[in-house]
Amino acid sequence: MAHDLDSTGTIRSLIPARIDRLSWSPFHTRIVMALGTAWVLDGLEITVASSLGPVLSEQETLALSSAQVGLIATVYLLGQVFGALFFGRLSDALGRRNLFIVTLAVYLTGNALTALTWGNGVAALVFLYLTRFIAGAGIGGEYAAINSAIDEMMPAKYRGRVDIGVNGTYWGGAIIGTLGTYILLNNVELDWAWRIGFLLGPIIGLAIWGLRRHLPESPRWLVMHGREDEAEENIARIERAVEASGQTLAPLDESKAIDIRPTKAHGYLSLLRVLFRVYPARSTLGATLMITQSFLYNAIFFTYTLVLTTFYGVDEKAAPLYMVAFAAGNLIGPLTIGRLFDTIGRRKMISGTYLISGVLLAITAVLFNAGALNAITQTIAWSVIFFFASAGASSAYLTVSEIFPLEIRAQAIAVFFAIAQCFGAIGPVFYGALIGEGEDPGRLFLGFLIGAGVMAIGGLVEAFIGIDAEGKSLEDVATPLSAVSASQRD
Image (cartoon, rainbow, N blue to C red; front, top):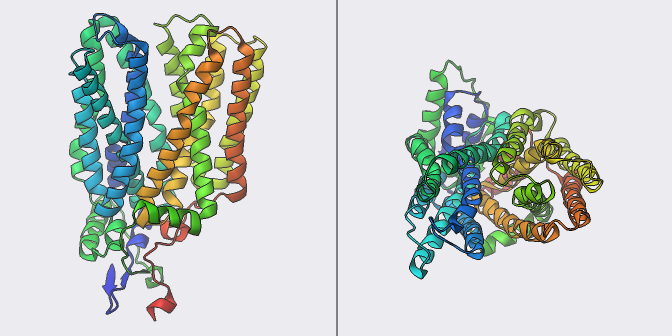
């Protein structure tokens, strides 16, 4: 029996325990395939936009100015922040499934329309920026709705590695985007190449549309919102799918049940009160991890090509190939060491990856300043640094999605994502100014040391106030706001 409803409106449910007792099955693989592609799409989007930016300045395309091209990335970023906050609230209020269908549709629409931009007149530019804002809003909404859904439907013993691996696939998207635009720009007429480039994401998105439509709603979300019959239907459906793969489900002890009395939805003002009054240490932890990784990533990623072309004389057309090596290091890290966040533990692995990447960046900065690196060795150094930093950055998303109660989970992710993006936006501007025309490597050396220090701060904060969430049920990591204590029930 999944639940009982007493006269006070309290629901007694075994649903969290039923989810956590499952072992890996094809059902869980389908969840990862259908939902995890959000990060592939974002990585592809940002890479395509940055690769195609210079092309949009050409006369045979849109003949945009450098400032107009730069604004494309800014508008996309603003769209992400808006989408995370807007759709994050809807995800907590209306359900995970509704939102991961809607956000994918918003992204597909925005991106497909971008490819139809016809020129650089006022109306065409408004259209271009509006479509980039819409595409960004879709992806921002994906982050909030999907991190919540994955965490809530994953058994506790797999949650860390799955979240970290899925977030790391951003770099799989970056590789697809880099190679795709490289092939297009070298083999297709420019005015067609950039349009097709912006359609790469929607093609992948359409391929997973069907998969998403057949996923269930999060049973945890349903029962916390008093929809216990639907929750029972969905958990029974998941269990049937798991049993069909050959698993035998062990009986559950009634003591693992949780008592819930559904509460009203939280707006962002009440959310901020909960975050910073009830969970001040956790909020500090989440904000620190998100801000530090975002600053480092945006600083290095968005100036990567500038460093190669300015200091090492790499041809602009060859720069994408160096980006593939950098992205490969970022992808391999989370996929290979992600399981250690479940076995060795969150605190040791998160603080370790942040501190190791900070130390390695500082060493690389010294070598760069001494003139001991060339384009290839610099790329190798960055690939090794971000092997660790990528797993660390993914663990920041894991942290903010598991340390807050279910009722505010998507909104909490959205808030910390928005904070991180705002701070992260400082990175490219700051480092772009340090690079300048390449006249003074010493300035960039100091910039690298600052980046290393920022990552070290994240690692130290995690070491002192991190949450040991490995192997624990979400309800044990963060008690739901609607949970009823024994004294309240009596």
